[in-house]
Image (cartoon, rainbow, N blue to C red):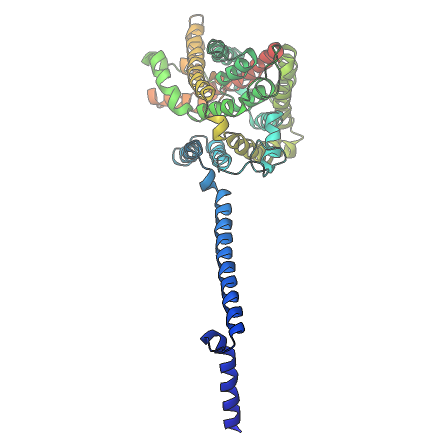
Length: 439
């Protein structure tokens, strides 16, 4: 039985492999087999070609095929932002989200797949809506108000003048932008960079330089939100680098040694009344700044009322953190290389640097001017004038640090906070005035 099974197996195997071995004796079978082999060869060649076509199509959709030098440059800039935030602690809450956003916005992609931030219907485009429509800045101001103590300003109201003086940077930049060929709305949006306030810069540029508004001559204003926002936040982060040399240049050793008398104690009742009075006064002067100033003083009222601590805590922690993430990432992502790397962007960055220097100088020089009329303990340390730019609280910290370098026992932080917070108010008022005339 075993022999029978063995013979049957051998015969079956020969039958199966005979066509392969070419053992067919029938001529017709030979022709058919040759034709079959040719067909299989053609099909095999077709399959290989289709595979190569598929791989090529896949490659065309990758970032490697669509990358440009602009994308690479912007990704490098995003990495630098992240590095500055981590390594040197330059406003990491701003620079790290913005840097990540710059990288996200410059990953090369094929247009039309609802991927980019400027493509209608994309996720990034929906998130960017809060920037374009000016939604995020008032929410940021709400959080700032809920974490700000206006005691130093209430105790010494004349220091508000230093915050106002620093706004000279806004109007100097406005004139510079006009000189360089920007139209009135665009120049107004660029000018607010001099206020050194990122949310205010975004708010005003979303109203004036949004790529939507039509000018009387029929032309459309340029979309400058990205360059303006990046410039404003960049120079805010670089306060510890930009301001100290200007402080040393415009003040003497003797002036830096001036000790100011401690501010008076401010009652809780004064703190509660201040946001209401300030809201009425500032918004009557500049109604167009109501979304910013209204939320700023509302947030401060939540803090100082003593009855809404839960709301105040939410505004100054969870809410402002969420909005900061969304604002930073979307502003960063708006810097797509084909839109961001332009002559206009370079001009805006140059104007931003000049405006920041002018704003710092304006505060310092006005403090020296005020000292001409003050005597004894009422004299001001001119360094606090540099805090008039509204980069809260970094510019006040820089003033304090420079004061300690001159005198290790001279604490200027509380004094510097007065012009610092008044700078926030001043930049918002300036934005409202510009919007009233150009909006």
